[in-house]
Length: 419
Ligand SMILES: Cc1ncc(COP(=O)(O)O)c(C=O)c1O
Image 1 (cartoon, protein in one colour):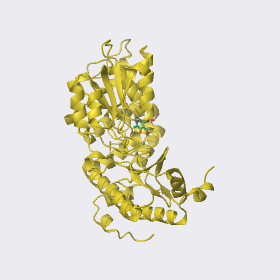
Image 2 (cartoon, rainbow, N blue to C red):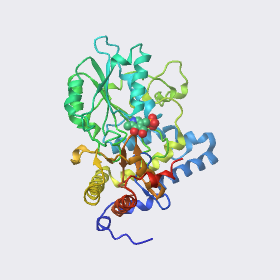
Image 3 (tube, rainbow, N blue to C red):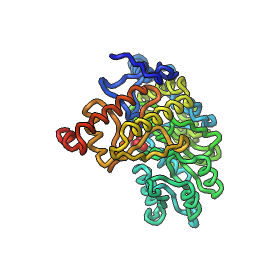
Image 4 (tube, helix red, strand yellow):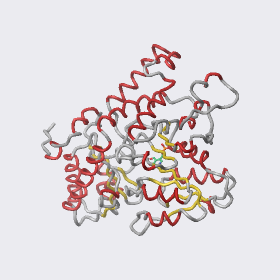
């Protein structure tokens, strides 16, 4: 393997973390915002859990180190440190989709004067489906009560439009911290404060920010937040998601109840009535997904060791560097940036539009480069600050230059790859 002499990699304080990851063979992986890679700590934590299962069987619930019965709480503590959230305000129980159902079922009020739930027109499909499904379950017509803030002509959300949307018959808002398509980072503080002012309960979908954009939940104080853990947190395919509930709501009964939401000291009394845990733990449902939690426990140790502030700095540097390379090396190739340029307006990935983005992504993948494609024309490029290198950015752009020098419309190159 050639020695990496890229000057930016040589002064990168996070460079040593790369050795802790399994890198797909002969691939430059820029898809960490879809599925982060496996690190040694996550692998070891899963192997340890398998060993405990082998040796301890049912006793693992109490005798494993750490014991399985409190593993969710232990990982929730790790997440509280990473997200600077108050103790007991985070829990994990299912997918992000399920967590959104739980947040709505817990925080939505019967209020005939304000039934609306606000989302954005670019919302991730599951968020839209959950809100529509939830409204229907309440006997409300989504066509009337699912309200949307539209994106502007550049495909971006304007905070002024969100603020205007918070007032008319809206009682809850479900919005993305970072938009999954464009990578736009919203002004979370302004929107959260405005929601509080209008008595609108706000839940941020932080799937594209946790682990790459610092979030200080103790300062931000939204009503709730949900996020995937298999993206920048590298928890593994389908890993158990995270969920935050503001302490002001810790007295509410869980909208969806389950026995793992019990006060831990009483759970095995098997009482007829649920006695909920004191904090966000009351939103847990059933028996935790132990193997999935184990991987997450390991991967979060790496995130804590690197520190989200340092991850953010490197992520911004890498995506800024890629942007500059696109500008300098591919000025007339039909690319336009979907992601805003300012650092405080963008998350962890760089989104680029191109009429041939589909073909380009097919050809890139066939040549060992893994970006992500979203219909109809979006290439999402997510270098991970834990395992990607500036040299990878150079190679990626070099390959795109090569592809365009071989073919301008790319259909000939990609045709043989389409199945
Ligand atoms: C913004 C956003 N929300 C929600 C989800 C879905 O989460 P899950 O399938 O884990 O429920 C995703 C998945 O990529 C996402 O990007």
